[in-house]
Image 1 (spheres, one colour):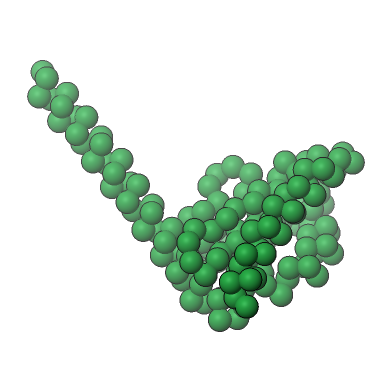
Image 2 (cartoon, helix red, strand yellow):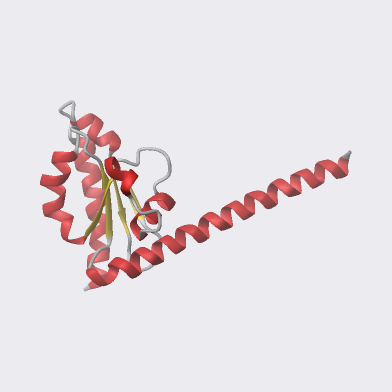
Length: 153
């Protein structure tokens, strides 16, 4: 009985390790593909948003003039037309997770792991006239973008 328990535990540990290794490889590959495709074009930011009345206009009038020249855009409302092999789709799927992923910003520095800034809660408060979380999240995004800008200079 003890041997079978040890084999089961060993199999579970091995499965967890394989899953972790695969996800790490997938994420690193997505980062490399994004950098290769968009880095030479000066793009180091992936913005994901949707046609929601809670944020679409804000994103398009406040964020795109500010960060649009360095951003690759993914519209969640149009995900049925996304190409699964596109570098931005693979990056989003490998980094975003399954919570508060819309709107979302992913900063992809020349080296290292991306920084993720989630905006869903901030916009939830913003639609009720509270902008503190939105301003804080935007400042966080700006802080992540600033070192990338300096590294590129």
